[in-house]
Length: 397
Image (tube, rainbow, N blue to C red; front, side):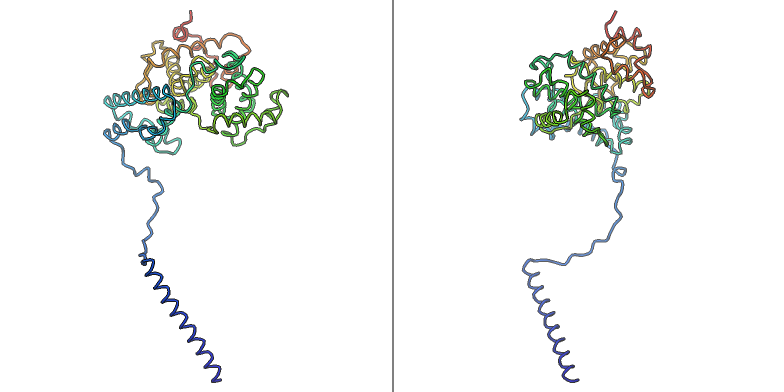
């Protein structure tokens, strides 16, 4: 018994010595690396909605932001763009700043909360929405600027072929019941690829490029995009799946896998929410924009300008006012950074394209789409499309 007690006491003594040695070693290590014990920080409730507690911007803050936004974003990146593109971007930036300062001098309370409805719908702060769209406006000019005649180097292609192809893409888009953003992204990819790879696109591969851009856009925008074999079937066997996949690789490589192309439909949504347009104005603007996006002569003006043109033309037709200055709004200038004189000439071209839709033709899928759907209020078949106001704006007899 005594030996057992002595054995246990020796074990406990050894354990105690080991613990003491471990404490001494830990103190030496702590002294060497100069560590200190940290005080416990009391837990505080996490702010689940920090945006709502943000103080409202003042007029002075807004003016300062208007003059500074964009400089830090693109000052370092401007060097990698060509000189003509840089000059266009700088000129637009200066004009947008001048317009916004002038608008703020009139009535700042209107323009400070202009993106309130857009921010409420998309669950973001209106100031963040404003900065995001300013960035997209500059990106559409710098990274995705289209030349005025970007198809001039394409072998065997002309603007009429582009019009027919886009009309066919509208049919495919409607048959698959895809999102509207998918169609606009597909057309944007098509135009960018035609500008950057004009030497390799021929008449025989033009339709292949169109169906492939629609396939890429569907995978980017749709939650459940159609399979590649479905796109093959809709071409009636003209192209197989391997050809579409090979063309997809070619397009993505030419575009450096940059899929974030600002589309006119994105800018249109913001304008309509800021203006609080009624349903008829909204559907007319969507119809005018889709028709105008098929017009080769005005597509190079950019998505921001196309959206402003569609809204202005829709307001003119709805109010039956052929004088554009009377339907133009300072809120459109504040958001788009454009003046009425900047869009007057291309707006006439857009109005002519809309007015021509009344003539029987095989290539008016947009007219059929907006004229047969109650969700669009059948705006393409309304008598306003052939009214005196439309004829005066389009310059038709």
